[in-house]
Image (cartoon, rainbow, N blue to C red; front, side, top):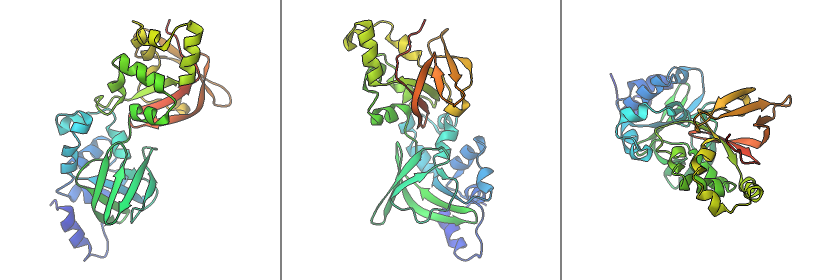
Length: 293
């Protein structure tokens, strides 16, 4: 029998031991969508493990309230997203029972951090969206903090790039080419790897080509230039091998390589610094603009 979590909490206050997180979710009448999503993503069984885990547990109502944030018409659309596992992993702190939630940042299984704010009795966890914690349920292997208003979404590539401050020209070009939404929340959950030239890289490119930024933004080939920097799927630095990969610029490939010290190059151009994680992919920073053939 499924129980609402407040009732589950009542029963738990009278029992010597709670259940594991997976069973609490399965037995909850308010978390059918979360159960379905976790099962589909292969994560429900993980939350039955030893843990300890801390789970931000959105109710069915929270999933419904978040559909517009994702440009989804129905819950089925949300469950069909390629980035579903990324979204769910962003709700899980995989190594500790964090109770109470305290102001600051919290690591997630998705590898990005979420921000916790506490103002009086109101606790919120924030990524690209803000989930208000309404209650909590202790489990044998951790704790669930229940959100009834929103699911917790990790920030997408577009937001991460904007906040970074080094990709102004790239973002302006993506907007001009009509590609900005490709890297936002409402992109149907597609995952991307972006080899992203910095503003300095674009400035050097403009100087080398003897053109202005306005010339570049009005170039009929702007979209193809940008697509040449993007690979479908999320490819982290430790997953990159010596290989040729297709780009969004159909028929044009990038040549990836990795030096003996682990440094990655793209068409011979070194990737600068650490990768920048996002909810719908990853950014690898480039000091040069790549020209498609």
